Image 1: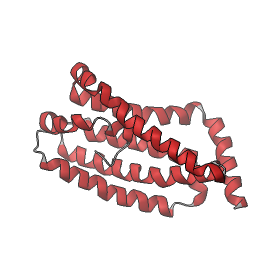
Image 2: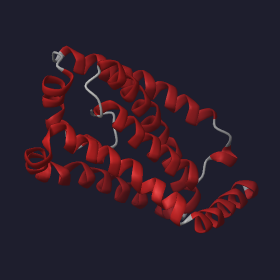
Image 3: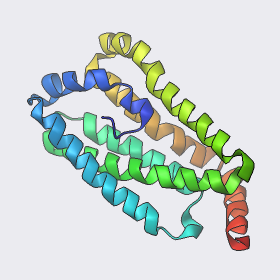
Length: 186
């Protein structure tokens, strides 16, 4: 799961149990599903690279995060390998598109002399988001089961950006206008 959202990827220790106990497949499937995520990642990065600049904005980033959650849910919500394959592919596309969009937004919004510091802070945040859930993964898996814990992580990754899109839509519209104005000046 190394190619996925750090919050979700923090539950890596549960993944082998998911393959064994839910999908009922051997460890080789971890490789096959990761390969599908990688193929999706190539496509997601390519799509982000050809995305018109007027569409690279905070809304696009939130939609991509939402799609990461949807991919996570597809991946872990059923005992069917075919559905897990679709989920991994979707997850790869969305996660790979997130990086270029987020980096572009940092360059648009951060003062030039602060871009390095902002990227460093974001990297620290990603690392914390990957490490903190490791502390609670065993307890959550004991209480909710392996699949239940993974589903909850996917739900969190999907619900948070969706809630922001809905609840803060006016603020997002204002921010998108600012982003487009900066783009037009450049």
